[in-house]
Amino acid sequence: MTYSVVIVEDESEVARLLAEYLQRDDQFRVTAVVGDLAGGRALLERYQPDLLLLDVYLPDGSGLDLLAELRAAGHGCEVMMVTAASEVAALERALQLGAFDFLVKPVLLQRLDRALNTFMQRQRRLRQSPAITQSMADALFSRDAEGEPAAPASSGQARLPKGIDALTLSRVRAVLAKVPRDFLNAQEVGKRAGVSRSTARRYLEYLLQRHELEADQTYGSIGRPERRYRPLSRQDG
Image (cartoon, rainbow, N blue to C red; front, side):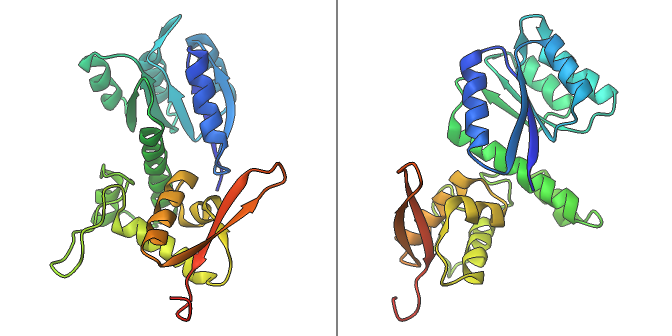
């Protein structure tokens, strides 16, 4: 699944950072980038993106007004506010208008990655679930590091380190178990597990440290090193 994205951001460096980061992962396609409210209105009349990254303070008005217009028109795209605004009122209004996340500049890429994972988890649940259940609702409204409800550690189970949750870890292990003799890179694992490439890499490195995986370094067509992973066989372990 590839998600289309529109970015409305007046700071060119921030817009470039967001677009480049999103386009590193083939699960996101940046449809357009614009730097003002008028341009944002024109784009959203033309496109129906899955995700909108929207600044609050734009040269010709407030991104919150554009968000209000979208909701009044019934536009269902998910909206992530990206702003230097520090007023609590801006955050409150964004929440009231249905923004699913609010990133404060300077944007931390690790925090952006968490927000993108939350978006992908929500989309997958909404598209795959035939009916609403309480567990589905709880998961959609949860706010842990991966957009997943964290599984409590039992008395006989070691607590997972920060940034690693049990359900995402289980999905990554399941992806690897389906092709036990194939080396996969982080992007391939992330796409199959429904998380971003950087998140998949974090989980793969965790499993590597636990000696559950082996890694192989290869080089792409432009000489960039790429790490690939596969489960250790019982004979190797």
